Figure 1: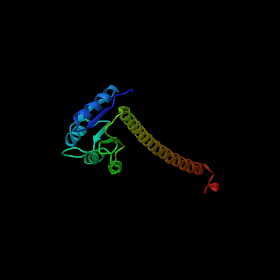
Figure 2: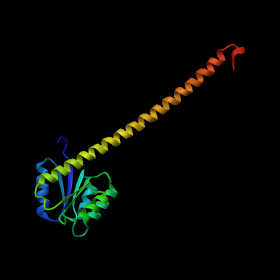
Figure 3: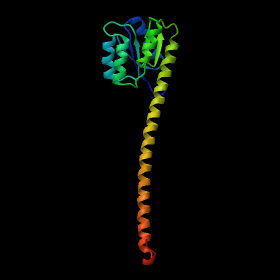
Amino acid sequence: MAESKLILTIEDDPTIRKNIVAYLEDSGYEMLEALDGQQGLELFREKQPDLVLCDLRMPKMDGLDVLQEITHVNPDTPVIIISGAGMIDDAIQSLRRGAWDYITKPISDMQVLEVAVDRALDRLRLVNENAAYQRELERTNRELSEALRQLQSNQQAGQQLQARLLPVEHQP
């Protein structure tokens, strides 16, 4: 990994949170930790992480509310929901509300989490590159349109000049 990415994990279970943080730090990521949704949103606004891992069922503020707030503040931030409930309705609701992925707990193989994180960050990179290409294309189109207007103006001026250079009997 060329550049270290900052990941915020919001998880009320300290054992799970510490395991996630330790594994992803060993994989080269910078990690932020939040004990609940409110603390997670504060850290999100303050640090602007590249990706958020969020538990679904937490005290004070559940993961769906956190997801909704994060997607409202910055819809381009990938959010992966991690839930122990394992209910299909939770996964559907999470994805409908803007989660990029959904992982069930317990995470028996942390490599599954790492693959999901890598995939989400790769998708984010592609989205950002596409947006940059789009902006560049729009800029180039504006420049070409202006150049075309200038050429048309020059052509019109040239036609007028040629018409004035013609002998009077041949002028339009």
